Image (tube, rainbow, N blue to C red; front, side):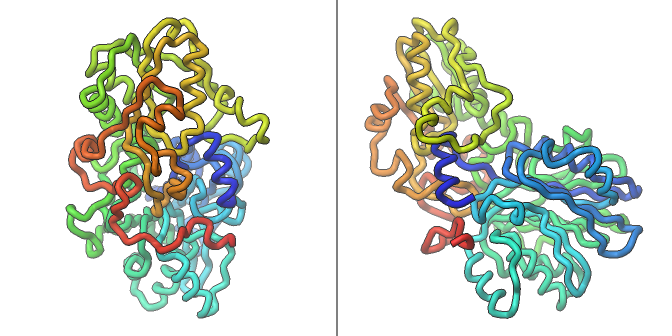
Length: 483
């Protein structure tokens, strides 16, 4: 997907682009894991709907033989009983993708499978590197030939290169981590090991689960629930975990930094993650309820009903209702067969795109003063239509509350927050934005509330404050290798 088409798509949805989702599994009893990885990816589908893939290996078979299936589209479109049946192996990795760097093409689908001197490597990556262009140039000058335009391939190359001078695959991962900068959660399959790694700041989530005699690495704990697996623990920011039948989980924390420096993406809690997930010990659902309560405390308004823009606005709306005592209601019917993304419509059909996805319930809002809660406003291109939809359904007043602060800066760490000029809050006051979207009043979550919302975990607020935990690149790196 080019930067332009990401922009066009986001104009329709007006939400930050999803992350990616990673999943890995190693069954010590030798059972096939492809079916379980499939269901794990289904549980992570909200993290990316552009492409997906599974790569597996049989640890008792020929060393380094990897079978994989990758395709564009949703998990249930890419996989069927026939191609899953062919993926025989007791160790494997899976991926669902949304592109923030690199085109939306089949070549860029993951997991990446690398054959090199020391064997094979299959890698699934969630995140974005800030120094990918320079690393890529260095590799190219020493003869590397790239098959994709994604920074994940840069990581795979560096791990393969470091493996030549390392005693083990996990040591190579650690050495590669010394060179790459940015956001990454990695799940790596080597012939006899499942390896997980998380960047030192902890931008992206990664956790460990167990079911019977099988271990799992996944972006979100909701995928463990889907499989009936038990949550073991989160992978620590900066930690490398190696999973083998001989030693279970081996931990390397040599790349870890102090807790004060941690910078988890706060948008995991606001929007990206499923509400039934826990990330680093904090309930996503509880965070969203708290955000709504804070909005009610800080920006109260008299009204008859509180409603959420589905799905991610619903929890915050419940929190607002609980705190304010104003009844919570369902004002929108959502088309269950529309995902978070649309096929890009032509200009003349774009106006109806919101109503394809949502419709207002007249019986709920007619004649009422409505508080409408959404998780974010990026460009403001859908908020005005949703406000208009409520007025058309008879709402007397529409007060918008947003469970995140205003977006003022781009993101360089794997979230598709665009250039400042495209952000509605850039150079505009809240009153001006309120007029643009046609609401009676508008208020955002206060930035100071974010820390309380996640129980004082270290978080990145760069897209709200312009203060990043890592120096951002001097130029926008997204889509860099497609130019």
